Length: 212
Image (cartoon, rainbow, N blue to C red; front, side, top):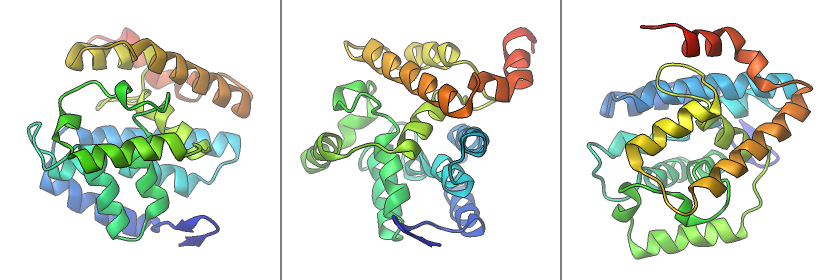
């Protein structure tokens, strides 16, 4: 569909693309994206944002993992996803692939091995993007929901943050990134008129207090 900010795929088209991508690399990222999409749609509905745009942004935010298998690819999953969606003409959503990992807008927030797969040109492009882009509510929403969604369910931020650190480690920007995410949560709490955890209360409670 054509919007004032560019072309966004319809939901059926987005699902078709995503199912293709999931089949290329059927790993936990697939369910994580679906949970992030669902969380983004729920929050968007509550605070008056475009629910289709929110859902599709969440669904596609990690789509670069379709070509980034076992920690190896021609570049980082964030850049693969960005280029993949740009080639399809979905520049508005492609931006989410880059923005979702950098709420503090500093490339050093990204701690893990896969960014080292990027070329110098790709790193320069990411740095330029971070220095020039003003993040909108959809960028912020997916940054938040990426930290709300595991591959199993919606959870509290602290649970997801600790999980990521246990898998990838931390650096000097980790706490700055966490501060930025908590500030975004407060921003959406105010837009929604309530603590956003209330929108997923049963799921979060089950996640925290039910043993498997």
